[in-house]
Image 1 (cartoon, rainbow over the protein chains, first blue to last red):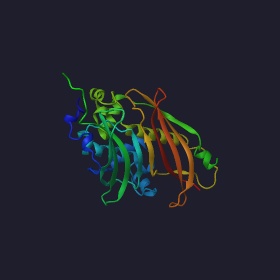
Image 2: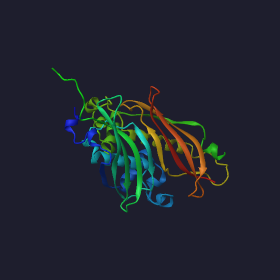
Image 3: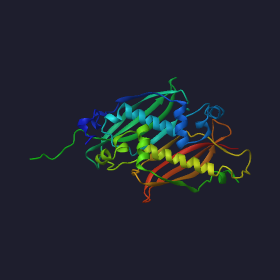
Image 4: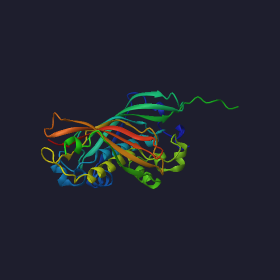
Length: 161
Length: 156
């Protein structure tokens, strides 16, 4: 199987508390802000520069769900695609702290808070993360806490004769 | 119409239904979440999910799409409350988001929004913070997404 621990750099055992992974940098263009917004969040401040400037957001701003999607891609490119990832059951909390505007460059990190074996699935471990993204001025724009599932490298299996 | 009626406080509003087809699931995932179980049927079969399924962010973004459509459908309702017509603003975030069941290719998902309560914001005069409960179910009636959210509303 393609997500077998032996074929991946990171398995559950590698996500030790305190370990962190760099995210980005990722330039956010006006074109992609508008493309995402047309599809999923067509509010004026996500579609039009002038409307964004006049709004409480102060410029053409990415949809918060677009920020989540870009954050997901940054995690994939940093470590998830080379890990035994098996998805995530949810998000404890996500905060859109400042607008992400056209031309901003996002970078950040995912930090392991804790890790434990799954009670119900012995081949799986559950890793709790805290994630944060910053803009090019070092201002925190997005924070998120969640747990994610990874296959374990070491699983007790019955010996074959 | 009072502000509470305008915001449809206490009413669970059905926003619409969306069929998640395999091609659309893969197209979203290639851009934003290219993990094997979101882009390839054979690799999905080897994963815990067992079948190709949508990125959870795809499901969440679709909630927003149908939410905005619902607000647009009701945009021309007469406003007779105090002050100017309320305006929808940005959101500070969400919490307790769960994806309790995957959205498999071919599933139709129905989305809902319930406005719970609102209060004046301390930092932004003229704006209120509206608390929302948001959800989605598949064709079996099983919950595939739920979360608590908030949105700013410009209102007297």
